[in-house]
Every structure is written in structure tokens, then in C-alpha cells.
Length: 62
Image 1 (cartoon, rainbow, N blue to C red):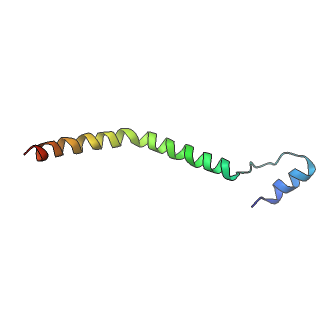
Image 2: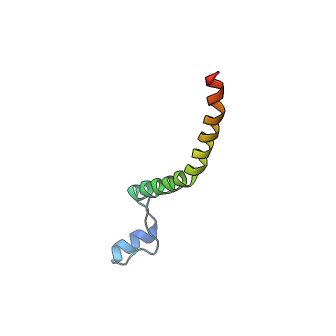
Image 3: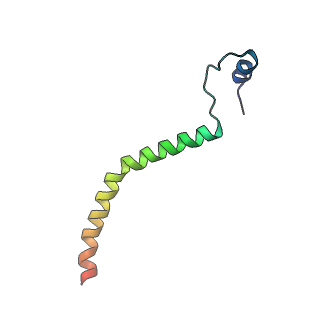
């Protein structure tokens, strides 16, 4: 749903004062935020996997 400001701007030829978030831009924004969070969490996840592996190897070897 568009805001009234966007409709007025469209009819007058002026640029809207607030950017309109279209569905594709919203998806791009969500994907970008998600990839940043995954990248930020990757080192911690890798360290957790290494610790888990170190604990499981002796159990599986016996």
C-alpha cells in the first residue's frame, strides 16, 4: 500500500520525500540483512563445529 505522499509526488512530478519500498526492494533488503548476519555468525559457528568434532571423535573411535 502506497502512502499519500508518494501518490501526490507522482501526480505533481516531484520526487517522493520518503523512499518507497517495493516488494523486490524489500526482498533484496531482507536478503542483504540475512547474508550480513550469516557472515557475522560464521566464525562462531565454525568454532562450535570444531569443538563438537573434537568431542565426538573420541566417542566415535571407541
